[in-house]
Length: 205
Image (cartoon, rainbow, N blue to C red; front, side, top):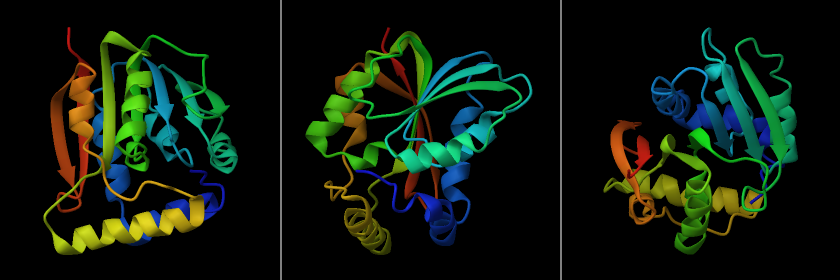
């Protein structure tokens, strides 16, 4: 999946459909991040997350990994930052080899792009990069029993397949894969009528 085509209008589209729910859901996890953490952000999109994290006392050292060159360019335009240091990397997280030993990994609306087999590979890959006492901040769409929410999810997958080449067509079972990689759920919060969840995972010690 490459989001170059929709990058310029991504934020506007997300607000049109979901209001501020996507940003509020992701921001819920940020309050749990300790100051001066070394952070890996995967699939950070247009960089709104960086503006949210750039708060007094943060002191974060951030590696920002994003496949879309346009998304990276939009994110870089948000600099300079006052309280965080960001290294931008335009590449596929599965082929990136620069980082390790992160205090925090953040995957905002990223893991829904993968089917079961690929999700297992991605989570296994990222698990190797997080410290034994680290924190994984997960925010994404989840399955519900609501017919209109299920219809909206199907429409979203169709839209992204047509605009970005996304091959996955359904929401994966995230938690099963996290648990299979020795990551335990420690906190969860729901947003947008239960259609979005923010979760905190930590390695099982």
